[in-house]
Amino acid sequence: MIRHILLIKFKDSAELSQIDKLSALFESMPNKVEGVIAVEWGLNDSPENKNKGYTHSVVMTFANEEGRQNYLPHPEHEALKEVLRSLLEDIVVFDYQV
Image (tube, rainbow, N blue to C red; front, top):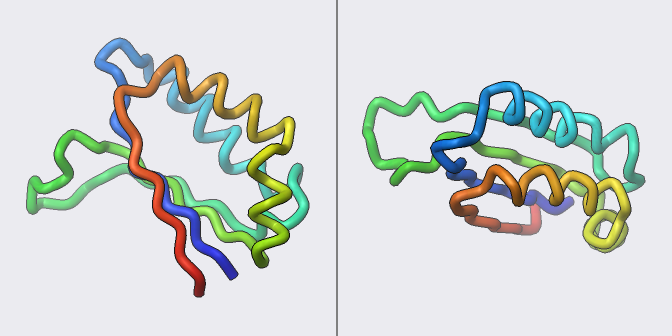
């Protein structure tokens, strides 16, 4: 398995309704893209104040490398990125093998 972690910092102008739409797009990926087996969407609630402005996270699990390679160019991923880019201030992407 492969974990695909995103830490997201949204533009100040991003509206909650737009962020909710993005969350729904991420959470729908296991039903739309073969090889994506789970998605978790989270809002930072750490009391440590070390998030550097990153407010949301996505943890996606791919079944294997084939699943990741299927997802990256997939039309559903491209559609998701269109929504994300319009809201995004910054992002950290980190993948690792489980």
